[in-house]
Image (cartoon, rainbow, N blue to C red):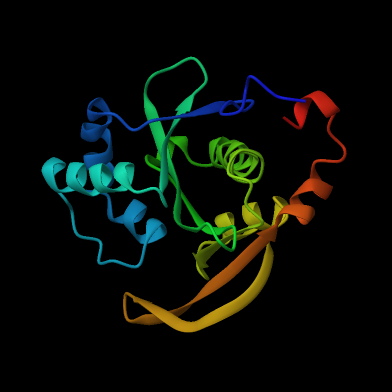
Length: 192
């Protein structure tokens, strides 16, 4: 059954990133707490022009799908979800998600955005495997990914250093058939 709500979840929807989102995204890139959860790069602020160029490049690549995460009935951006480096011949990709402001974290928006994103990856892009990396110190994200059905597949030991300590970066993967099993308890109309 084809769904008309492909990019809508229970709490959020996925849309294009627009120029109007750049002030909020620039604020996130000034927040070391956000940056230390989002990637391995040094937590250095970026200006709006630098970030606009980065996002413009991702919008033109056939191997990258970047989404703004928005609440269902609001235009305010609360996060980013990205499928990066789609390997079309093997039908695999990496996913990343970041909820921008601390006030939006822990509200279920990340879970809902990931659920919608996975439906897009498996039903619209027809992918076989979605994988991600997460820092060993990000317990909330690890718990979320495991609840969504991701399996821990490996460890990049002592991959990242923060505040003089070394941390592992964990590799997780989810196969389409594993994801479909988690969808079995939902009604056929909800599976999209």
